[in-house]
Image (cartoon, rainbow over all chains, first blue to last red; front, side, top):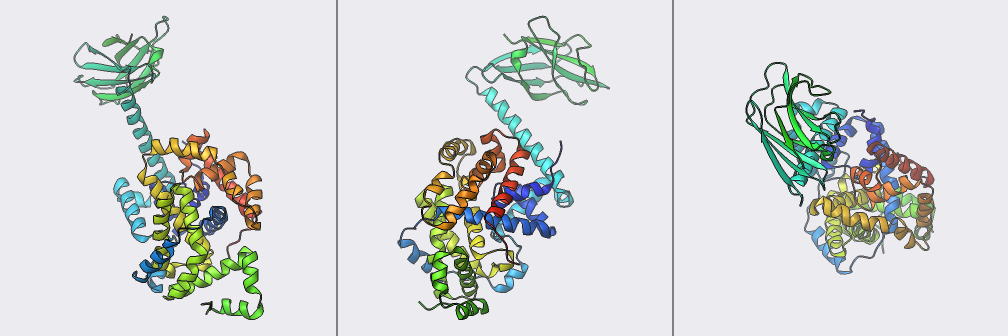
Length: 245
Length: 214
């Protein structure tokens, strides 16, 4: 995955078009990048001009309420400014977000580059998106359940939805694949064509819940044991074949 | 009304130009200087300065909050919160980092965006706001414009952007969308959207002759 220069995020950051984690990461970056701080300031000044067009008269009662509340609110001292970061967002929020980011990523992440952080965030988003897609299949109105037992032990359950054109495979209780072997999933088309790989488990993995995309490509779902790294075509007899139609 | 301008900047402006008040009604720049000066007075606990400042910034804070939140009641609540925050933290305003108005509206925008994101399920909001944002792009803003020179200038400069630049900035700034949401809404690649937001802002900045005083 290519990572664009962090400067590309300057614009999005200046108009608050980043999420909390990106904001925390960029805030940290800003502390070390005087040029970025100047650039962001210019964009914010520009955005301020965009706000001019939204001018609207507030309800008259608001004035008295604000002045009364202000009179009862103690001010931060000027000395506090020296310690405060450039961003005007309230301190507790930035600290909370920064703490949350550290909590998620581990203390070591504080020293990692922005690119690595963003990559990590992308990975989390992809994982969440996959989880959502699995839920979509499971809850689809046309979700259909098929299952079969593997030769040698274990059971595979496949939930397919034609509407989603996705399936979810659940592999349980299969024996360890053995050294230099992995479980591989296949979709077998009904036109006599070659099986298409639908996923590969890790070397030590003998159970899984996986999303299978494009189930309409096959009429049979199959599992086989393949050499480490997987095979372009099945090289062993399938352990199970589950009809999808 | 007696001005709270105690700073050398405010004093010298008045000394040099007796017509400064008239100028500030016509052109936006002096009004910004007034806001900066008022913020400095507010930082020293001057409540008279705060009530003057209120009159200048409340319509802007309320207007921006209403635009992003799309709900007058919530916008009123948000504007109150932001204005009290301005009072509370005025000492943190640093004129070397931009104008006072920009400082105030940055707080208002960020808080409004945070609110709109936190309270609505994203899918629901994507759908609702997407429809709304798509149907009322910046034209709604431009239509309210009318007389003020600056608003006409903003409109002209917005028209000078490419469609993607304009839509990306509009959805992000007025709609409160993240650039990821914008990419989905516009069916564009993420890096493209990031870049368009940035180069759109650069083009706007140059067109509007925006400068940050140093």
